[in-house]
Length: 83
Image (cartoon, rainbow, N blue to C red; front, top):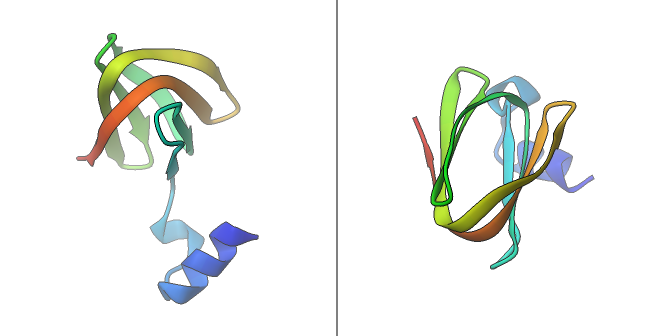
């Protein structure tokens, strides 16, 4: 699996990566390891993941799917901040 290869090459373990963010070009982003949605607007989505808050910024954002710790954000993602 790709994720396992990345973790191995970074010499980390899965505890060091409680969440994964995959930006899919202009289509949106898939985020796994999400505990809950903190805030949602058309230009910002804030998510609790592990001990961090992820802020997905962009245009025309929409939560297309959510469940089982995964969130699919549709829209033009301009950036992701981790706090």
